[in-house]
Length: 287
Image (cartoon, rainbow, N blue to C red):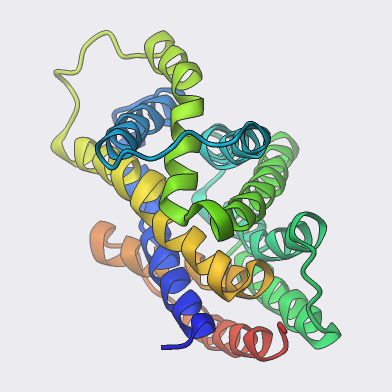
């Protein structure tokens, strides 16, 4: 298997894992406060990451890498989970699809700025079209007007795109799993404070489904998914592999239908087919 194909395969696995985050979060926030969930998931993943680094005797990152790792932590460990959790307190989850559809474009732009990638003009055309299709689908489902939540979601997309691009750049040298583990460890003190300050007074009322949701977003969304995702970005290109995120909202909706009994509309199927074409086009013209 060549390097690029390996990158797309790894990125696809990471994206598929991330697509389960929304249904799992829905399960978790039924009984957990969203801010506590943000802190708790990062604490659990951070402790697992620390154990991996110690067990495998990984060297500490260089001084010059710490700043970049802090950018990763700020974007994908703290920023995106917290901002989206706060936004989704006030708007339906379908509303977030408009902004998640902008995440691949944000990743590609930061890939250009931070990693020096230069995709061809046709790539940007497919990237813009894919983002527009995701946004059009979400708009067709009907959206509430919530300026404050929209601002939070836009900020979440920007910090996450930066975190993805910075992590993908670092992964070329440090390795994908090492990057996310070190980012989680650096964020651990702050996330411990957040989790402790917002912890529930009693865990007795928490349903098993909420515990399952917390376990998924902690182990898979916060750690395992990034191992594959950052490896994919490093091997296949940040801008190119990042376009796989266009499929993430639709996979998330499919999982929500299977796990939560939500319906899958014909519009969703049609939009997904269009997105697949855009992702294929972006891959072809990424280099």
